[in-house]
Length: 78
Image (cartoon, rainbow, N blue to C red; front, side, top):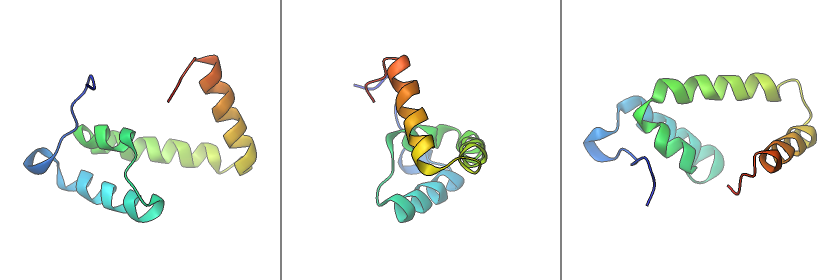
């Protein structure tokens, strides 16, 4: 059972619905983190801008390697 419940149905703001649809079109699915950001769609938008700014100055391979290194350092299994 997750610590944070994912908003659904009438609880889901219109902005969050649009964000989910856009991610589904781009990725083919809606990632778990995006589902939880349904509580705060403004934060998901800011998160997306931050990631785009970071990735915009890095090669894809380097970004992926840094992501893996950070996850290992944090003992993240996700």
